Image (cartoon, rainbow, N blue to C red; front, top):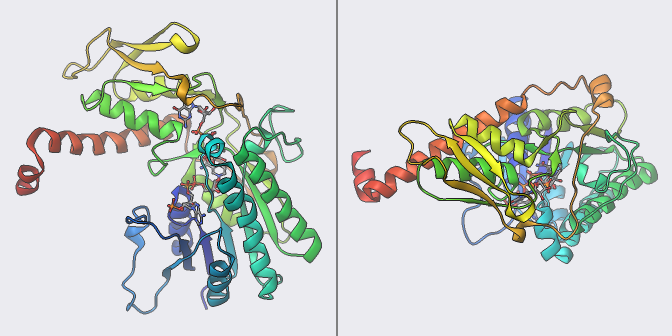
Amino acid sequence: MPKKALITGITGQDGAYLAELLLAKGYEVHGIKRRASMFNTARVDHLYQDPNAEPRNFVLHHGDLTDSSSLTRVIQAVQPDEIYNLAAQSHVGVSFEQPEYTANTDALGTLRVLEAMRILGLADKTRFYQASTSELYGLVQETPQRETTPFYPRSPYAAAKMYAYWICVNYREAYGMYACNGILFNHESPRRGETFVTRKITRGLARIALGLEDCLYMGNLSALRDWGHARDYVEMQWLMLQQDKAEDFVIATGIQYSVRDFINTAARELGIMLRWRGEGVTEEAVVELSPVHSKLQPGQVIVKVDPRYFRPTEVETLLGDPSKAKAKLGWEPRTTFQELVAEMVASDLSDAKRDALVEEHGYETFAYKE
Ligand code: NDP
Ligand code: GDR
């Protein structure tokens, strides 16, 4: 019998990479998707299987982390060996605008999954992974941050994830459940949501390079993050559930860059050299050099600061210490920062080229030529 995994948040960035990994390992993969007015399965459509296919090893179920009955129903039907709780309102900035919804999904949602497991008598059978986050460290108390570093959340998102972290620890201690937290630092990919900073940069600059947009408006350019690749990080999520004993782990690269560094690196990938001028809200990036055939002109301002993107309380710096994961899980990040940026730029450039063609020739002509 193949092992069965249930992934909440399967339609998100990590859910899609994790589903691919588990399918490759021979798992039967079940995922919870929420109802939306438009298709929301683009990241996993390539894994879709005809409902009449046998054996069927990839199945999506409707459900929502704010709805206990749907969670209980799905968990009862699937009887999973492993549950990966990845679903969340995961945008820190948005959590200031929707704090209650964020708490309901990210904090209580985690409790609902754990309670469903307990009530259904799966506390001994099913292993549980909680998508915890470096945002727990917020206003950092120690650098680099490790498993023992005290938390100081700085957003409604982080406060909700802190509840989720501790309820996971509590269910492990109270009921002997195999439940663990992966404290993952930022991880990105071409599948990253378009409003997170890295993807906003690679998508925005690719479109600017092709003349589809003029300028990228950014928030805090000095924020420092420890960025890795999502494909590498989901492997650690799986490994955490394969140990003898449930434990919490920091997953990070141990290397830090600023948002400004990310912009410079992405621009260089596109053959654009930038010069920065001004400071604070007047800081901007000017094109110094651009590729010969580019529509960009030297002197053109393509990045500006817009205070709209500042957060009421910011996490200025995060840097992880993955020593424990290295020692116990054999963790080695495979993708370098440069490779990550290059992969994201290449993907967004290819999308932007398609959009530029459609804009130039019109959809009908483009479709006809195809
Ligand atoms: P995404 O935002 O890409 O994906 C979030 C997923 O959760 C989506 O599938 C989304 O569905 C789903 N979801 C949101 N709200 C609900 C709800 N109420 N009920 C059911 N499903 C819901 O996040 P990532 O893949 O980047 O991250 C995965 C997890 O890891 C999240 O919990 C995030 O907070 C955490 N994390 C992420 C890090 C990162 O750098 N990426 C770092 C540390 C932690 P839909 O597609 O319909 O929107
Ligand atoms: P973060 O990621 O808040 O770390 O949370 P995000 O990419 O949103 O921001 C990173 C840093 O960049 C600064 N920033 C901007 N951010 C966005 N989104 N848009 C901008 O225009 C912009 N300009 C500057 C931010 O202020 C911040 O300092 C991510 C999410 O995936 C969480 O779910 C996860 O828990 C953490 O990473 C680890």
